[in-house]
Figure (cartoon, rainbow, N blue to C red):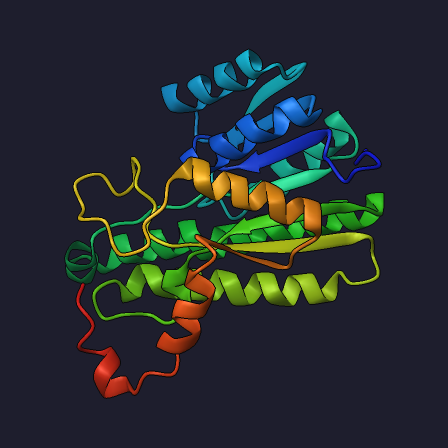
Length: 253
């Protein structure tokens, strides 16, 4: 149950090996989050994330096999988690992949798999999550989107389109949950320096998983519907969305 100060005592992470998600968990556990469920593809990284949550002081930490590309199986995984652990205060949807634009353009099947991972599979998972949270009557869903979804660039339009779709879905989901006791927070980070972007040149206003986590936890506490990380990107992209298309298509990769 969320305590009187709005701090969650249990969290389910979809994409438990995500660096941003791990940083969020690391920030939540000292604030009385006692139960951590990490759902993701079985891997050493997922096991390491569980070890980190235990080391931070969580009482109950469990990993659950979860794959967003398994469209038929993900609702059952979500339902089973809620059935076994009872009410879940917070769900963080952090599963996703980046991929290189040139490689994805050359391999339509790989592009389709990325779209399934980043958007279609998460949409299915979030619908199942919303049903469970609506039944319990409270909770918050945090969806990790990206500023890449604010306006897709030719340099990463495949990845950007998945985030645009996820972002729009999350907005509609949040509106559909008004009055249910369940709320949605959409997180739009900029370029995050970490494992996913290793070897890439950082973009202006780059950030880190830890900085994103700080912004997310603050947003959860304030009940924010949208969180930009860093916050200045809210105003940067407010302007960028107004640029003429002829100018936008010349934006560097």
